[in-house]
Structures are given as structure tokens and as C-alpha cells.
Image (cartoon, rainbow, N blue to C red):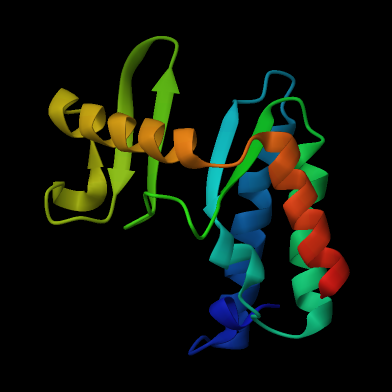
Length: 149
């Protein structure tokens, strides 16, 4: 159990949080799973959180996820000319408008279908992804950090 989930939570609550996260991961194993493109800042894979064993397990989980045909992970290098100012999610649907989630004051409740907000976040995503390492180079970097941990 990582320090993010355990900090300030009762053990029963931690078990519930872990179970919820594990259930959500099953979505990626459906017969027709969603496509997932994840952009990570380099500091997220280098920052030591928990024990070396926890870090190795987390990095290995990323490498394992990268083997899935519907998962792409790219790392944004520390020296990139853009940065991730906040986490956000863009969800595209076959039969409906795209939806975005971002914890900003601009988006009430954090979730929106409003074209101006979704469009702005899509543009931000494209800028960050263009500055990120390609998937193969990202995998090599994660593997290198894993070996050094």
C-alpha cells in the first residue's frame, strides 16, 4: 500500500480505495477495451515515494501496461519546453461528445462537455504529447530508472 492511499485514512477505507482502483483497472481488460494514452512528467517516474520495492513495483506496472495494445505511455522529459500544470483527462466516445475532467476553477465540478473547455484541453494535450518522448524511448527511460532503483 502506497503512502498516498494510507495517509490519513482508516485501514478499512484504504482497503475500499484499493478495491475500487483494482475494479477500475478491469475496464482495460474488456473484450473491447478503451484506448488509453497517458502522458507522465519525468519527475513522476523519478521521484522516490515509498520504499525501493514500492518504486520498482510501480515502474514495472507501467512497463507491463505498455505491453498492452490499447495502452500508450509517453514521458515528458524534464527539459521539455512545456509542462503539465495540472492533471486532466479527455474521454472520447463513439456515440457522444468528448468529455473532459480537470480540477480547475474554469470547469464547474471538474467535468465538462463544453466544446471550448474540451477543445482547450485537447490542444494542451497535443502540445504536451508533441514534446514527450516517443513510446519506445519512454519505455527505455522507465526501464533505466527501474534498473537504478
